Length: 138
Image 1: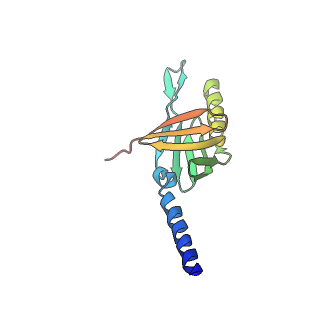
Image 2: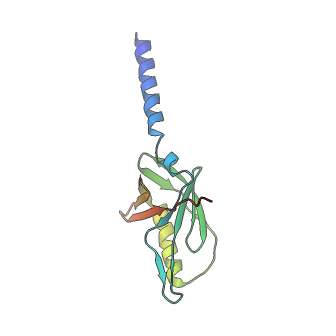
């Protein structure tokens, strides 16, 4: 009897673990987002968007430079490893905002996805909001 109860508990725990795997990792796979806050380059008269993409346990994107890192999500918690980036220079404001953006990502604490809106909250309670980039169909 004890063996049956133990087997039942193991099955229930396995099903619960599998059920929670229809999680953010699967929902984010292959998707790209743009940070809602744009950087305005007044001298050039343009706005620069920062991106964030998820694929196979890696985030990547572009600010001034391209970047990538490993990430892990468990429930609503996210951990992003330190970034690897290219080293292009650019306007001072863009380099400053890029440094803040990459630091915010490496300090990410929680993540949520509702519709096409992604929200990441940092350890310092800073909220980053993103909008999913629409896929181009030809």
